[in-house]
Image (tube, rainbow over all chains, first blue to last red):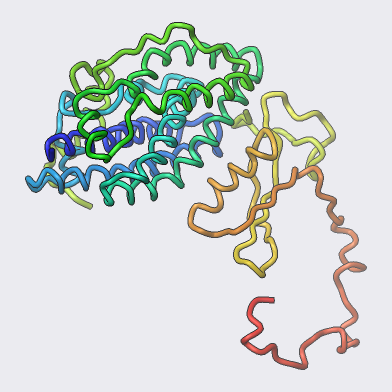
Length: 251
Length: 114
């Protein structure tokens, strides 16, 4: 059980870590100052949540690894994040679409986790939920604004949706780890969140004048670490190099 | 989106009355109420495509550290401002009429913020 729980907590923490790092890559180069600050805030929220999830993961594992150790001293194949969050930023539209596709799931998932049988998990979910409620409001509004914007912004948002769509479905696919969490009352059945997700997307895409792709094919291999995309390794080499070059360096 | 180059904003004080460039977001002034009981105070300005996003941007730019309980935004062009030439008439009170200035009593501390 503690192995599965460790694995499960790494999934939660790696999602927020990898997405947080991706979003932080916009710091200083976002299209406008206001978005730059908003994106940096989102990244900081996600990194903060990472500290809680990976901190708990290290505790559960009981081998003396803390959140930093887990974040900076694991290799790509040990990461358990969704394929969606490791996808590169590309243009601002792709970044915001990726954010929305993640936030739309994240907010309902955290809501469900506040009822977790594990009080520590429920407490982290409760704390994160406030931040993520704002994230999804913001990313949904931006998807609507750009989707229903100019010809150029609309075309870019539709492209972004089509590019990212094959990565959106992975999160609803349950495996042995998920099943164990469901059995223990720790986490909800991943597939149970799909109808609410589809409904939220339908509403936002209608307002954004975007067309959801028909094919729901979903790549797998992120959350079990079996087949990360080539982008993760590049990202980690950037994120981890300092701790790898100067182990245990601190401020 | 606004762009890094500056150009005058529609209806704002400094502008000749040209159109806002298509690629630019309008300017908004932001007012934040720091605590219940205090009034909203001007904290700065920002760009946003509409009022809703202006409030969101204000939240990100100005209230990340629990600074506020309420946010107002108003498009800069909608603020009517006095002109500097009227300074004398508007702001220089007759200092010989001492009764206009409430300096003869202390406000008890229990009253709190006024």
